[in-house]
Length: 65
Image (tube, rainbow, N blue to C red):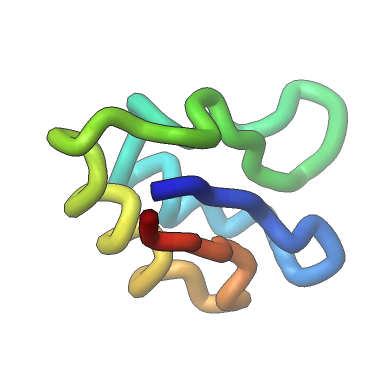
């Protein structure tokens, strides 16, 4: 799995951070999320999928291997 964020869509809700804090955090500079791990370990995949589902802006892009 490889993930990316569409920063043009991200509105800084923080739902991704709540769903997968090991993978996402909120930026200190802008009101958007940042990816901590772009290729998360398999045990984090389900939380990343949840983060994508709960993102109201549909800003998380997941590419499955």
